[in-house]
Length: 343
Image 1 (cartoon, one colour):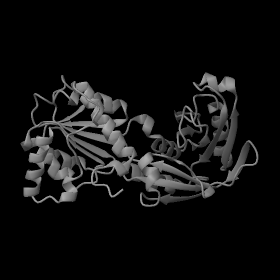
Image 2: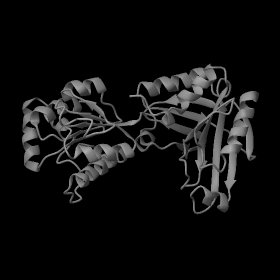
Image 3: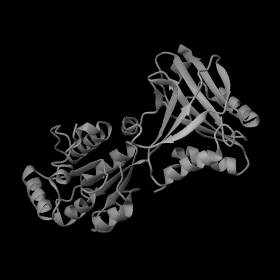
């Protein structure tokens, strides 16, 4: 599934550059704790002043764009530091002022085209990738710093940053900025049941691409799930086609072993960060027995969160959906809480 346009900032910048329009990428590398845009947020600027993305709530955007246009002409990078006043901070939704630093890199000079191409390819293949950029400290509010040094990092280099979606400078190396590029989060909901309806909506608002899988078209219908991606296939085939990676969660909601077990056969050996199954403790015990008989290991079966959801006393479908999304979030952001974790 293609990412929404607002998530395609590197892709857009590369396209503008290849069209001969000139382009630069601006990245937030440091800011106050409650900033309107997080560290790692990006803005693409073309030589014709086309924009995609944002590096602030608007208080410094104009200055960043102006420097980007100059950088595209000169071919050098800029490290910009702004002190945001209390009045400007309040205008963008903060209670007090602070500091923000933005790195502006023209493509083709400061940021090589082939380097950005590799990043875009990794994103299209849903491969987690990070960029380490070595930046000399700026001693003026706007420093022209030539061409920063870049290299790619994989998941094993900075796993805690990938798990937390956290870009930033390394404490041990204050000139080393790590920019995290994770694939979009996905949620495969197996079973178009009542709980799935609020769960799909909540997950979408939380930033997930949602796929509802159910061979029963009456359950996974456009009327019940307006605007959602629906797959009317058996879960094993559907999940094979989807592919389950580190940024995918799977929820099993049908109470029907024929459907849920087919999904588990694909989910348990996968890298999915969350596998949750609806049902009572008794239902889950029967599920475990079936999986043992099918040859799954104790470690694989232990990956299942069942009964599904955090124990918040949920009763209604919406409350159960809330408990599931909360549990997904905990498993994503605190990997040590995942069932079977060695932590």
